[in-house]
Length: 352
Image (tube, rainbow, N blue to C red; front, side):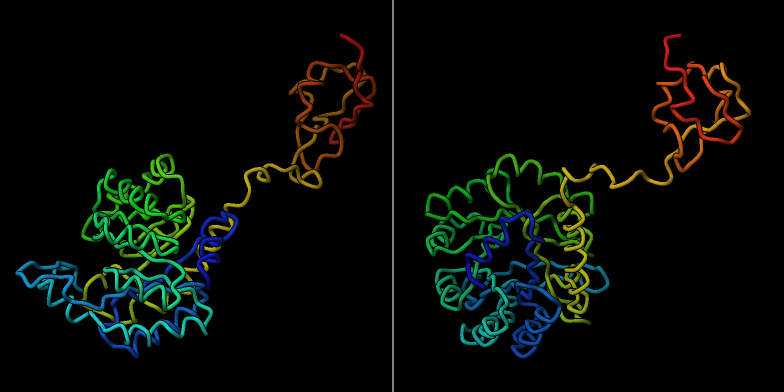
């Protein structure tokens, strides 16, 4: 999948949103597992797979700083950040083994990068887009460098202020990026659902002249569906192997076996959005359940037509119910038997 094809999928609102199943580092240096996950993404019907290039543990200093995430029992787990990175990082040669098959699979590849070397590697590998992770929304050198690689750029704005998010976009644009997706990233659990604040997409649409995306951290898939209905063009969701437990971000990742049905639901919702201009098109024929005007009793010539003289029933065989105001208080010029439809020929059209 070329960068141009990716961008076409993003910007053409008539197409389903771009779903990015993100295998991230959920495979924990197990290259064989990562390869199976890539194959499973393809089998699920996805057009794209997302990953990351975490090849150098030196991007994290050796300190006592801990990363906290929810374990399988929804209890907070703390892990030394440097040690976490060390058990996740892989050399570039291993990433090549994981992602090189994407070309043969005709699977578009989107990669998060954390340094310039990783960005160059991603482009050489054939990535159709790069992502700036939320932690790097303030990393001007990295943003500018990626912007100069002539690839579509996804900027994740998680934990950023609105000013920081728009500043990152400006850095990218001034460095030459013309194809930018601004991605909103709500807080992960244990933050409550109410903090997703998805109405922010309306605000971002006013401020950012470009496509919007969701980096979903909800412990379920509902937010993907909500974002689809709100018109988001990119939907990113962490993807883990079935049965994964007690690891970073697994609590809110999607098991790979569920990916196919989630993608199909997103596509169905997008298809259901349809075209507003066609929502109230007239039906090809009058619906059978619409009513006409019927004589309530035997009516003689000269009878005044009113609600005591008529009833309403479907299907319409005479005057339609929506024409009631045209005959209310008019007189009949011919008798109508009880239960028979009142026709225009029965109504005296002369002024009262």
